Image (tube, rainbow, N blue to C red; front, side, top):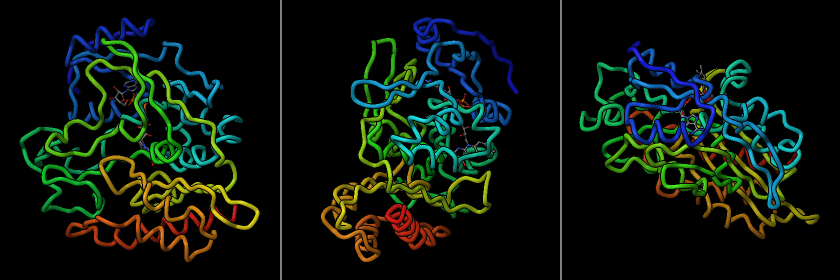
Length: 327
Ligand SMILES: Cc1cc2nc3c(=O)[nH]c(=O)nc-3n(C[C@H](O)[C@H](O)[C@H](O)COP(=O)(O)OP(=O)(O)OC[C@H]3O[C@@H](n4cnc5c(N)ncnc54)[C@H](O)[C@@H]3O)c2cc1C
């Protein structure tokens, strides 16, 4: 591991100032992703600003919903009574990720900013435009069975690995950030980005911006929800494909509203607004769910080894919807 300086921040503004001024400085929260990347030499910050003492770990109600502090632990959020009652989809997605030990260290902000698990990103002997811009994409003509079927570019076909973020994009969350230019709010769907020709940028955060919280609006999706994750092992594995489904169903089994997103399919958590619209006013039946899944897959494109995702993704979505409807 390269040598680095470590500082512990007690004031958010001081932490922001350090990271904004020094392109080689990084915030560290739980460290479960950043330290791995440093040990492998994938990222080599010269300064770490430890933000764990900042007062950003609260989960609190607001006038419009629930606010999760950026330092709230994944396990704390998943077990929180308000989260489980108001946003059970989020608790399900969190508990599908990593392991209990990791969830006890991982934070809300760190989870959103975890880097891709593309093996070419981790392998320093291979080209990777995300790790080293301009070096090429090893996955494009390489082993690409884990890779994107939506929104990829000729420079990067990696996927975002966070489970939590799939639920947050479906639930219309908002990210609160503080930076050198002040505070701003970013709709969750605009937080992560597609690779385009700058795949080294995972998000629309600017230099030095600190995530302070994530807000969830009050939601009718308290009952009929499911997070379906398909992976190669029953636990401790990233999604091949995952689907978040939330339905508001009336007494006649008619869908009043739907929220849907896929994980493991794109460089960002993949919201399915067109498929949601298909469901509104329809009966909560497998036939309706299949119609929505067909619309969800429009524009999907496979690479040499991930054609199976073109079938797995719609099937996972239908399964998530069936389980949500039955809940
Ligand atoms: C073996 C293993 C299996 C895993 N399986 C899964 C899985 O199945 N599903 C899943 O979703 N995840 C999985 N993970 C990933 C895990 O969820 C992440 O490592 C964790 O969420 C990162 O959170 P952290 O607080 O440790 O972030 P850190 O490692 O501390 O930071 C990650 C990044 O976020 C930045 N950062 C952190 N907090 C802030 C903030 N408030 N503002 C601005 N920048 C910030 C840091 O600078 C760094 O770049 C797995 C990890 C491991 C090691």
